[in-house]
Image (cartoon, rainbow, N blue to C red; front, side):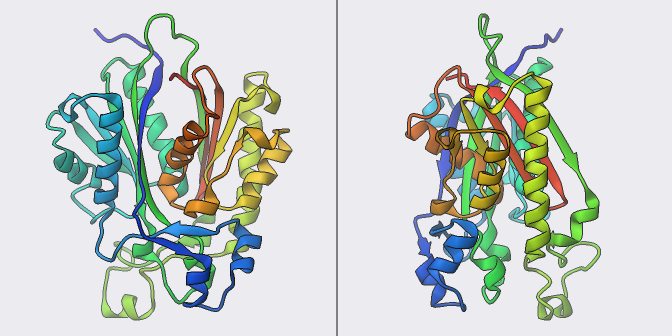
Length: 334
């Protein structure tokens, strides 16, 4: 017989590749400048993998750090959910690859593809397995090697992205912790925006061929202006919706952790919901947009900086290709 109990995050692991690529480095590759990139995005540098490094390697290293911090063995994990848009391959899933690499012999798992909203979608999905009582230890990994799908001649996209991974453990709240954990979520998709940010080649619509390679269809294609407008509107809309549902304002939050795609989007959302900048986590200047990894990397920085403590009310928000979007409200549990 299963019993319902709220899910909480109990540990975090992170990994970024050691290679740092600055805006000045990129200025040697394409027609851009450090000042141009910072003004439009807030990015100063990003971490890039060495060629041939798969997403599973980053995810497995983040998972290993997570297990070390939690003080448990891999065979205690019951479910692995991997959020990514850059899987090692179509199949098997990256969850299978990571499960094998860390020797989580008793776990099952799967991937979730929701672009920059992937981590929040995976977090919400994982919470359901905890709340239902079916599992007690679920690992969520957000990992992407965005450089594997970047056109290094396209300055509009290649300056934006970095590579990285983050992982969290979800477990049931204990007795007396009823006010902690993941409190609520809300997600949306709007497929009408799908042609504003996408990778057209390699799937069943445009199978890989000499033609798709020649036409650069295996790289990111984006309409930056349309994405920016949608993200600013939707991030604020979802954040406001969550706060109003719980009779809260921005002043009630301990911290706001958004997907790190653009500094201006984060600032606009924070201003619209009345948040003091001291409550807003921003690390895009260090990592760029690491897609599914941005939120766990930001959580880690918040912990390192002493800005995230047990009992803090945290609002997470993200918007991604698809369009996908979502928000999660949680009270931090450790």
